[in-house]
Image (cartoon, rainbow, N blue to C red; front, top):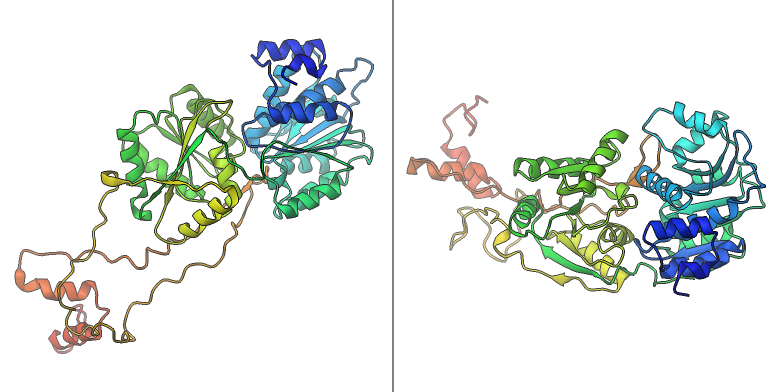
Length: 488
């Protein structure tokens, strides 16, 4: 099957596809649309950016376009549940484009904005509703929408929505649906436990899998640079300054605070950047996306909350400023580039600590080893304490056990899961703040003074972690005073 004309879609839909420039279906579309048109439940698995949205919107438009069917006030005929506001908006735009000549009523609801216009849209009834779970449940509890006459239910990005942090919301929505319905699940990844859960919710589903689970897009050139965490922001600025091909870049961080800090550093370096994450208002998020889409913003810094909701062509590079501790998230992140048959570059900044474990998990999942790239002169030199040929006075001899005054080595945080992260409306992602395990072990370089006689006491104060230095400092202090000059 090589053309949309062979899918037996309505003429209005065919014309809309031609107007959008689509003539050949992608593999997920060619595999999922025919059984979906027959009313079968679908479990669709495909890489991000391969056309999953059209794979479920086109069958819905075909089914609901019957002029003899009418929508009832306060009811919805088809529901598309999606994890993020951005993704809901983009699905709504696709429905509007593909269904331009059908006269169907559709709307998008999400949190972060006033609900009055959404309530007005729901009051008259809708053929198609794209929604995030938080706001949908709020409006359901207020009695503004009922799903008892629903014909088609779509769960987009099923692996994220059915993960432990979201299963309760999904179940509450599903509990209100009629037993007789068509259900479509689509996702880029499907872990084994999530696949089993989806199988219990679907009825004899047709499994359409056009790529191995968690396979990354082949056209993405994947690289990794090993760099100390403290040097990552400087490295990013240097790369942007020296590589003109990085003209539309998405940078991913693990936390919202981290995203803001990266944007602040880029802005100070005269790089046009904007952040998008759950703490931003809907208007700010949309402004950032539109600025990035239009080219006014060169770098968009995002958390995983936005990885599923950014559908912008022409993204040249994806930079994993911090590697995700859930390897499936890596697949979704780099899927923002190399879309619609284009090529792209994904660069991972891997620190010298626990992120090496994340890198191994990613390569194990994707079965693709990342190409190691030497940062070379791009990475600034991190100052280190001066090295001497002999150990400092009072230090333990080589091979001896450390004194009890020695600074302990940092213990990495064993927690591997991201903490639940929800806005008040969209339940749209999970982020986790993680301390840099190497931070505690970094020692500031000794500060040199104009007076040579003062150098040794200052060095002793900078690193009093040896018993001999501590004794020397105490002996040299005036009577009645502590080494720092205060009275005892």
